[in-house]
Image (tube, rainbow, N blue to C red):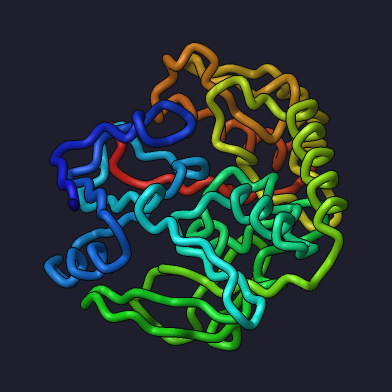
Length: 292
């Protein structure tokens, strides 16, 4: 049964554990439920799709629109007769990695290091360890604001580094995708997943509230290297701190930082890296809503 809540605090739903409220929150039961709900919205209603909240910050003044929570709702994951994996937008990326390995497929292991759902991973062409999601996308299922489902091919999209957009203007959102991974050694894939997760635990501040990598890597360089070289490891703003473990992560150790403090620290990092190295760091993290 679909649940609608008013004035929902987003600090409960984003991994930074900070931020303002959304005017309306929708928790659909499944894809059919979501399609019916979208058909009831005004065409100009601001809409925000939320998976695990790992790449998102809502400013303290809130988001005057509707947030749709896909994790636990758009959760179908299966292998089809032709070998492709069908996954809905709310499926966590690491779950897809494990599913592929357990079905004797290779190449999906990198998804174990993506701390979000398939919908967000599709929207930003998520990647790590030398792989990107859209290398493996066979086709996608889109949902428009009238509640209609449309299948599209990769050729319909402009796919770049950490950005994906429909070539034709559209109000469609990612509902699901068919992913094609080559046959491989399932045991070897599971071993690689374990190794990747061990490396992630060793190098990233996973025990503290964070939103994953804050900035894209500039061409030929790494954002973390530039931030560390600028002397910003451990820099703080209102309880938010640049991680000492990985400089491209901002953590909220005590859970006391508000969205403004986090955004202020992001701006300081960008300004100091540009001043010292002439490099403009581009955010990976989405920041939406009104300030206070």
